Length: 587
Ligand code: ZN
Ligand code: ZN
Image (cartoon, rainbow, N blue to C red; front, side, top):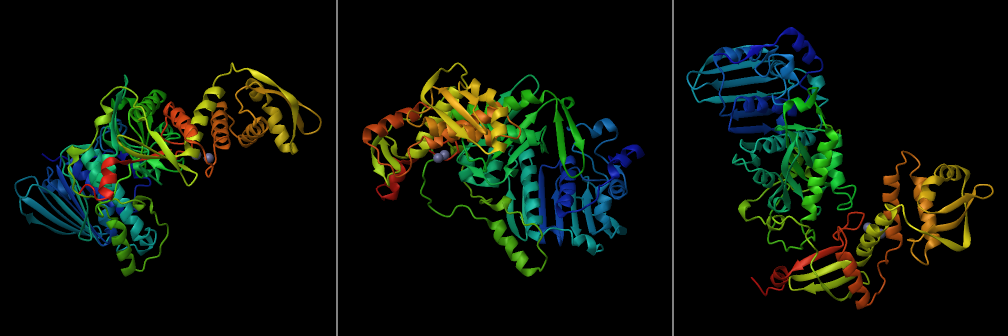
């Protein structure tokens, strides 16, 4: 039976606009998704010169009959969907049908395919069928696209540099591997294997294959659900971050989707656990009834609308926070035994670029800012132990022995050696204190011995005047007093003694900064962070062992003792084992 149907015109017109092959990655995408649709359990992708010279995709899927193979290159042929309802259902792998003919029009295509008996081999050159013959009967499809854009030099100009072309393909293949851990993906670029998954269905193994063993060991399993959504996957410990948002991958019913708000919810869950400009590595599967999502149909991007979206975002945010709460987040210093990971892709692409003089446009290093390649290591041995219990993990007790460089408290216990950044630790303690105070409107106020008068330039004066209620709710007694100035007679009790005036001025500065899109949450958050830093012990301040002890005590009581409010670590750890290894006491 021939599986490919011709779409009706209405649907075809809906799709046709804007659907053109623009980049090598669109070609790879089309071919790989055909392989997935054909039920392949192994897909091999081979590219030369970032796909501009050659793209080959080999699968062990169902294959095509001779007639289907010919039909696949006619316009509007598709096996993916037959009507409009199919188009909006995310459980089908999107729509195509336009793409194969478009690809064939601008390249040399060789297709070998077989459903298990007589095979077919066709060659299409610049859109013209040049060969149509019988071929061997290996079940599956092998399609080779060469000399892409050979007859459209104008378009070649629009291609990004080979470097970013390859980066795009690499990113796409990685995401497909996350979507289909039960399909074996092999990705080879100029004879180098860039990805090789085992198709065992184990997502953590795929993460290891993409990011390396060290990252995989620092991923935590997450699994949460509500009435509508079932979310599972892996999230990185806060110490593992990337400079690009691209490593937060969300899949809906196995389809990679991009949703800014979903990414924001994930990122918010890590608030103060990591620096604001760094992003976690996350792979989340969201499973739900297809009727709960609405896909924005545009070939180049896949945006999506969810029903009960606030509940879903809350579910994800809380799920991630719970996992972080149950993990001991002190970065462990490990001695590298060998160079385990190499950014081979970067090296390789740089080589290509040296050979080919192609004008660079945008170079996107984000994919390669950290190693992307991998080592073999037994995934089963990964330590996932401290997430079994259903309670918050407490930072271990540790005993200070001294202060190094006036900055780092050296501590130890039976597990090993710790270093605590005293400024970061104090910042964290202050931050949680101020957050609590700011979130509690029933605080008392204190009358100042000498009222404080503050003067501002008129633009800032106006902003403060508009927000006097905010300050009064915080228990400030503040009034206008003369031109462009205010008088403050009472302040909340929780301002640090001896630093009242400085604190008040900081709070007013935060208020002025928050001028646009003022929200009380953001204002409180900013105030807590600013005050926590200002009121913390500076680096290069010598403190006594007693003071260290009380600092550690307070830190251990924090909700998140591991990072300062800016997301930098408070504490790092050298295990006994690592110390002995470094001193060659243990081999
Ligand atoms: Zn600071
Ligand atoms: Zn900080």
